[in-house]
Length: 103
Image (tube, rainbow, N blue to C red; front, side, top):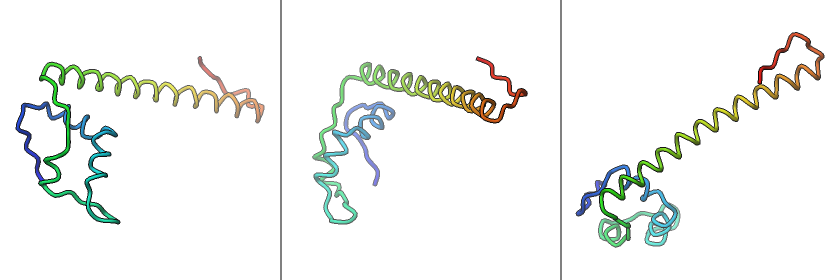
């Protein structure tokens, strides 16, 4: 199904808002069918999606993108710390004097 919005909406903003728990819950409540619920076009038209002015939408998109970048940096940092800790523990357990851990 293809969605066309009547108002000007930043596609990245729509993607972010569409995946929020508030909008997803509306989909769940309006879905028809027990095992694999579906939504008709008429039902989709009744879903409430907040649409602020475009500058605010862009601000929200920018904030989410920055948070995602930060989350990826933190995830990589955590991965590096974990790897260093594993090497240090292995060196301690096996008495490997060849293991060098940089901090």
